[in-house]
Image 1 (cartoon, rainbow, N blue to C red):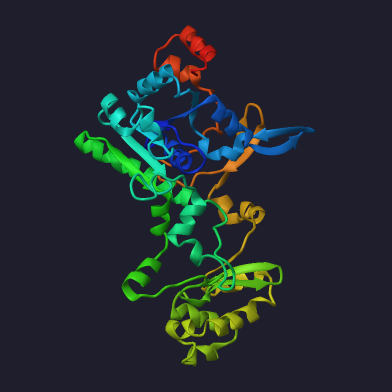
Image 2: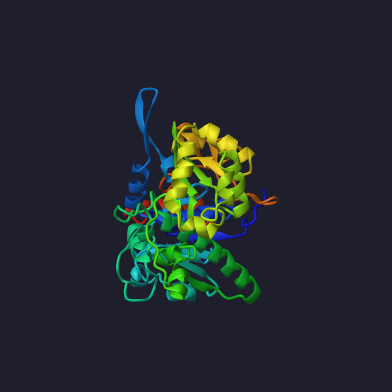
Length: 401
């Protein structure tokens, strides 16, 4: 299949989450992504596979690193002169270089944007860091949890009487990864028009600040400082998470006054639609606890399935709060093919996360699982760059590859 990015080659120095996720999206869309890592980093990556027993034998399955699927993997030691030269040789064959090292790390190796622009003037060079390439925090090492803390994201997560709470996963890494993929495609489009490359500077911190909805503007414009509201929407407690006999459900009963009226009819409380204290969103916002008690009183006597079926049929948005096992089995998740099975030469049939990129003509594809470290050394250094097998063997013995 000729995919949207089949003509794009990416040289990927990404590690951990943010940049590997970015380049995974590009690879899903057909880009040739060459993952570059040292032998040590490669061993560490593979060691983080999912532990399981198969036929009585314990193994680690690299499906844990689904972000490296669809990529070619080479090993290259950038602390050696020959490694630097080979990397620059690869740059001449690529459209994009991606990295998420600390600010200045690659420049000290002679592989910063200004260095590689001299090698390939139209290169698109993308960097993801915790705080960005400039500013008072730029030189500091940072991770998702710090971005959540500084951005204010943590301050609005959790319950009012409990401490600030981090998101259950590294949310800023995924936001930044998506924004970086969008930026790369935008930069390639610009290069097509002008012939000019550029440096992309993405920060985990920035990615969370734009994800705060309008909470920033509520403060900068109106001076309103919102904090944790638990499982209730900031817009009022007619939208939130409520208990059932077998778990919890998410209900958006206050999406509009019309939805609220439908909800009240369903639960047998049409009187609330005529009560000035509950009839409008503004009034309900001032009576959050009372509204929550009413909704909870109705849901707590019913199962998740009954609540969701009754409300959804009646035109009120509702969904079960799934655990991971329930999510994988959810019929909508199955219909969207968000988990796919692939054959692995070592581990057999493996189910892994699918692609969310559903384009009608050039959809994303999951072609293979994360490669082993150096799996494509010959394909890249011999077939792509044209070096001899004997040179490859020499570099391997010298610790360059």
